[in-house]
Length: 355
Ligand SMILES: [Mn+2]
Image 1 (tube, rainbow, N blue to C red):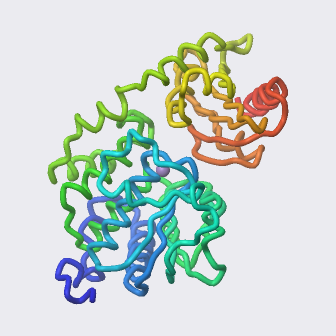
Image 2 (image 1 turned 30 degrees about the vertical axis):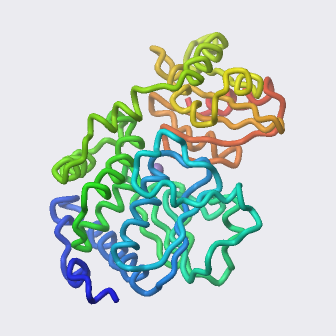
């Protein structure tokens, strides 16, 4: 079935993106090229796929899920896209969002049968949450991700730690495979790139990111519209939540660490959804002199989700890992099950170790 598709007939011969991509590092380059070949071969080898990203999906998770779905559709494969949790409504504009099954709404109902799994934007297999219950242990997995903490699970792992987003790796993969993007696919990839770089502002915004963005804009992506929708616009509930949580902003005596928290009552009384928490953690981090900012979200169960952001060389992934979490050097997260005051003290102590 794939041979009928001319755009994919020379997937293994052409590697147009690689030479311009990391010149001078031939070793890294060729390994990445080989991994991309293996990933393309994996997709060709099977016919029915499950595509899944991490729980509480962000822009890159949904972008990557949809981009893989777009390719599978193009290659006439059958597939089911799934996530444990609801897709944030601000991401609704991307083509295919309504096709993503939400596992928490149908926990007992397995998906259509499938013979391979593609996990995107997940540092470890458990990050897909309850979707693991849909997958039998013998089913082969393709693992596509950019987290430095990725443990290379799965039969094939396509990992580039210095990629800003999984969407960036998928762009490389498509370019490597000679797969021509349409505006829908380009918009999907651009969204992952935009959100995981904080609007092309974070330190992961490399020349390769901007080259990728440029190529996507050339396909016809409306970058300004996506930026306005995802970076500027706020829901009313989100603004109420910010108003409340900022009133609780606290600092250590040296003002190098700052934090705030959100309670279940805040969520209930403002009508905010989990997606409305996005970006709040930047307020403490953005204060002059603050090296690490963090946000604690207390859940009804008493569990506390902590988001950490570093504005300096402090590696917050290490802090998160200490509590069983993970992430990137400047953005990481973990979950604690202790009272709020204790959680704050424990996090501060670990951050101080890294300072
Ligand atoms: Mn990501």
